[in-house]
Length: 180
Image (cartoon, rainbow, N blue to C red; front, side, top):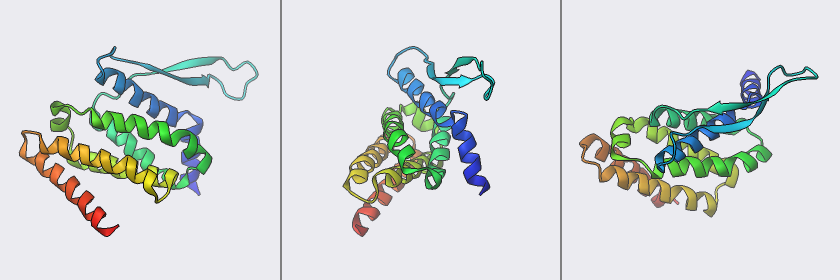
């Protein structure tokens, strides 16, 4: 199908590596390092030619947290067509980087980020974790503390609409706990 071809082309052009590099660069920025740029694997300047010049592709971080969350959501939407071997290689570092970004949200980030974008990103991370780890304790140990911490971050926020978003995330977590 066309969707699988689209995902394959995205992967062939190092799309997954670029997204992972953006998450890494965001972590460098959050942790007080340089504004950050990360290198991703060499990309052939002219694929298919014998003397294809391999150049480093430099990726700057996404300008906003919402941009990063949209990238996480995009990868989550592709989880059904990704192979197990690819998920085994890409899944854990991607989940770790995305988790680290979400755990380091500042009050300004929380205020500027739509709650819907955050919810979509959390759901995307859940889909990737379930595709990689399956429905077992490993995915729960990764996702439940993350969702709880994000909800608590939002509940501590001075803005009412963000506190309500935190309550929504927390109530979904409790509802899921009741059903399991």
